Structure formats: C-alpha cells, structure tokens
Image (cartoon, rainbow, N blue to C red; front, side, top):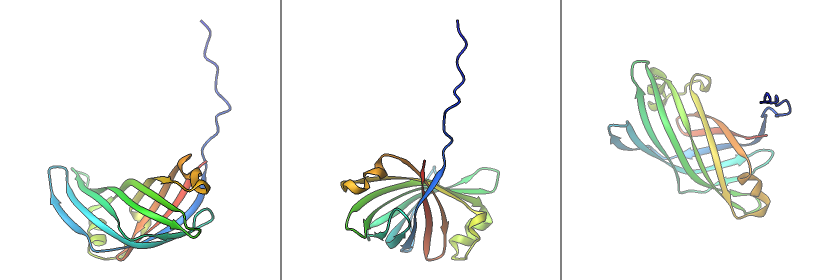
Length: 166
C-alpha cells in the first residue's frame, strides 16, 4: 500500500469586495414566541447597492425573516436570519437574493439595538451567506461562486458588505 500524496497546490480562498448594500426597513412584525424562539418579520422597504461589481436598488417587497433565540446560560442572543429581496441593477437586470446567516451578541447589546439605540457594529457578530438567482447573462457569475457578507443593524437601516469568495 502506498502512502497518500500531500496536496500542495490547493489555493487558500480570498475575498473580493462586490458591493455595499443599504436596506431601509419597516417596523418589526412580531409573530410571537414558540418553543424555538421569538419569530419576527422585518419588511424591506427599499435600498441602495453600490460597489465595484454591482450597482442598483433594492425593490420594495422583500423581508427579513428572523428567529431570535436565547442561548441558554451564556447571555448571548442569536438571530437566525433569512432575508429575501430583489436587486434591480442600474442596467435593468433583476437579481433575486436569499441571504441567510446569523446575528449574535450579548443580551444587553441586543436589547439596546431592539430599543433603537446605535451599537458599535464591531460588538455584534453579523455574518451571512447570500445566494443569487438571475436570468440576466451578464450576472450569471453570481450563480457560479460562493459569497459572504458582514453587516450592521442601525435603528432605521441595515448596512452590509458583500464579498465573493475567490
């Protein structure tokens, strides 16, 4: 039996900045507490996208569907996030986006966010993995790569920076 060969040519992933997204939000719709946590829906009113690879606007009608759970014993509040929305690019293409991830932080900071206060985004973990779907040939690259994003929640908006994993 021969020993397996070492793989030396695997590239380490890097990140390429794609765009910054800014979402304007409607008030939270509280669905209620269940055995899994507190279910809530946050309508997305609209937004702006600008960056080196994407520019356009977020169309009204999307929403962020969240399940807020309190991790037992450690004082951390976790929101499982799944936002769905449509980007219309400056050249008229439409791109459907499903952006799933996690926002978590100490209970006292999450309570301040919920109360409309500004909290330093570096103190809250907010990461997502957006997926894209489009019929526009110039944007098919969005369906051929992985993406990650980092975000920040403010009283009136969410700001996110999207990266392609290269």
